Image 1: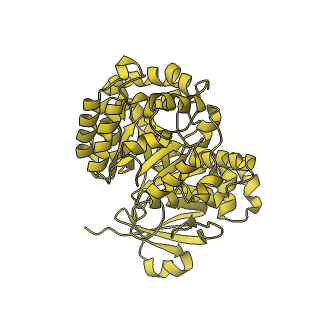
Image 2: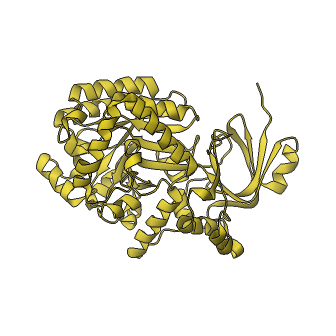
Length: 430
């Protein structure tokens, strides 16, 4: 059945094309129109040009607002929703003292359902419409998250965490069960609706050689499935990996040895890489995921954006909740900007938007579905209110552009600046 279209009138900013030199290449329509029909985008452009052709469309007037594509969070942990902002420590002790005890609660499916609902609500309320989310070791925890995301027709990429050593006994699986459960979940969820699966070894130290080998077999067997894990986040972690895998040339080489460095592989953090690792990531078309708030919160280090760019490595921004301190991707960009400032390489607001929309969508071969407002893509978009409080009203009295709005909201904004989040054409913010 054909449904009538809806025309959203607002200022609009997105990237319609691939770009390696962001500059002024964002598509900005000061008085724009976004046409949506049957959950997909039909057209985008200047209101004056499109309105006559869509005179019978339902008009939703968002003038004095800014529409951007739905945001992509490329690395975060849904079981850690409730433990955000636990007193920092550093990575390995933080895992032991906070993360592992919290994740043991996910043995209860009822608890998984509750946390999945909280998690998805936080994403939507902050304008995130696609998430790469780590689950817990429990197979049913992944089920709960996919079920909750499906209620909103949301693009969710997730997977059961696999770890068979160096963690509490209550969180251990085995090499065989990790492979079996992961494959069962692939068959159940990958490509079902908008759900996609990610093989998820937590990080090299918590997986035995045998487990990594079996997960690597799945990575080869299912080349369109994602892989998500951690890489070179903390110096103590890196030293630990060297002691556990003495035959491998580097931390990245551990994953490479087990056939997990490839397209659709996402490596969280990448803070202390050697030159050969940057080159290998680029060659393999894998993605380095920049998690600024958790890198700062856990004192792990500063992401070398200049080195990643110089080697033409695909980069994505991510919150990394609960080590990360906010579900808000704009605030996450704001922290990335500060890290760039410390390195004399500040990240512009347009570059930041690219790294949480079109950039990762292209890296993951999903740009025909998400990451932009091009005709044919899902109508995942966010309506930002630049005047959401008194301070914002004052700041925006003489705003210069869509980029200026984004930059300001990345420091003074929060979820209150997200007036509406649309997923597949449906308003979902609660």
